[in-house]
Image 1 (cartoon, one colour):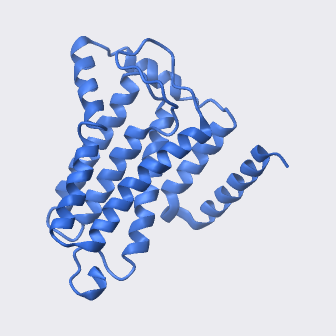
Image 2: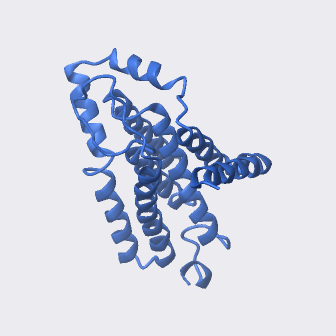
Length: 225
């Protein structure tokens, strides 16, 4: 059996399992559904129309704004904040929180690189972008990285009074970063959805594994073992 047929059968089996498990596995289910379509080289009906609609809004001011947002969504924002969070947790000697954050950030980046190489989806080429990219497209690294950071911050803040401000700030940031990539024409909307779903599924899975006996900041031997 050809590798592509094996992958297709595996994806179909995983989709069936996720449908049985319901909303608890919704992010993973969404990613698998998107990945299955990308693997089969199917076109998403909403990709090109949304790209053109965003491009119709283009202006020099919006160009500058979204180029800045895009930069904050990766090398000038997400990566420095990821590092700062891990270092801060280490300084506070919160070992399990450090493991959770570091595993989330590093694992997300490695998974994104691996999936891009596997699917090798070409980027949109509907117009000449003001901030062109030349790597593969699915899933969006900016979307996955920003969602990973947002999920880590939100889950770490869950047992504190900052959980809802953290949730609102994280949501706004994730949406802006995803929107910037579509506006710049360097990602299909389905790439953004795939990145969001993959980042959310990865962090949620780690959280479940590491905090089976209680959430972050729980005092005692269990939380810091």
